[in-house]
Image 1 (cartoon, rainbow, N blue to C red):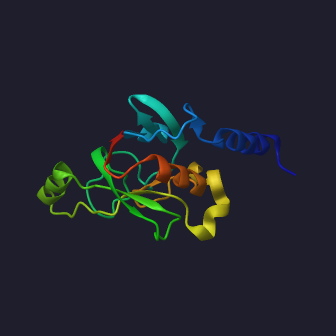
Image 2 (cartoon, helix red, strand yellow):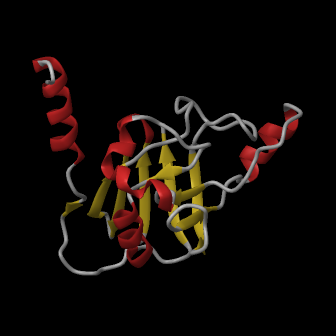
Amino acid sequence: MLKPAALAILLFFIVSAGVPAKVSASLVQADKVVVLKSKRLMLLLSQGEILRAYRVALGRQPVGRKTAAGDKKTPEGIYILDARKADSKFHKAIHISYPNESDASYAQRNGASAGSDIMIHGLPDDLKYIGPLHRYADWTDGCIAVTNPEIEEIWKLVPDGTPIEIKP
């Protein structure tokens, strides 16, 4: 039997997990993606209007900008969603053009590699049953994670070449 406090926490997680917010019912494609790291929120925008909003999980060390490969941080800055990986070890993945010139220069000045392979991705297929509960701990190596149904939707709504701004 769950204690009342544990039950309240569980119910909060279930209710707040929800489904993506739908502002527009049409399949208008996004022309920009914005990630608000401190809010664990990713927005798909079209002409400044929110098409969809998703709760996300980030790198295990989410505070601050990514400065080196292996630091477990999600980058901050302006990038391009430049490629897709249907055969990812995660359900699907969309590549983020990290590092940009600033990221690479910063890492080089500090004697490090900036890293690469930062993606928006779903869950590993063997853990897809976790669904929205994956959001309650930052668990990636620096990527932005969503549920498998969400990455399917994002895959359709976000064309290659779309800019992504990742804010603190």
